[in-house]
Length: 230
Image 1: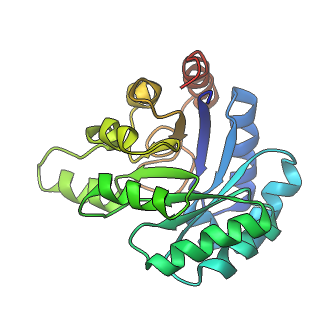
Image 2: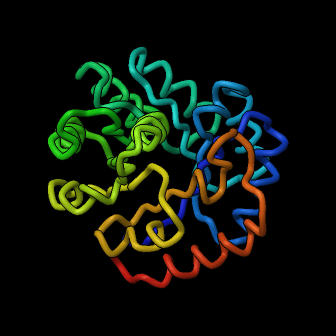
């Protein structure tokens, strides 16, 4: 598949999310993500607003589903989401029912391996259970906590190639990527590039980052889209 750029709208005000989304689409971003903070703050209404303002644009609802999987996926699909996220650390039955809901309501399922002891095996398990995509994810708290101890901050790039090699479905790397790292994701065989903190969202608060964000996004999108089929 051709590389895809997704922006994570980890914001808590829908007006700011809509403004940031419009700017990102002007810059060449392909997919919008209703980030977990936005879903917590605005719920289904936030997803509905994104769908109303941006018809035809794929919208990922980052639910991080751990239980009640069928109902959560159904609710987000009816609100306008095209993709939902379920966690690998959820019960097997939860992942299965999210996959079933995906088929029933026409949404794709992204399986997230955040916090798994063996992230490669978790990715394989998610694929076996029917997920359409893998989110290889080093969490916000994990990164910041380890850095606060004076240790090297972990990166999703550390095991990205092993995850890509272990599955046949597309992989997305998430978690504190720098501009240079984000641009390199397709080199690892990961065609889905998600942009969040610190590139687009302030690393210390759920708000849009300062600076000429649109120009930075345009540069990133141009470089990522320049890759061929992956």
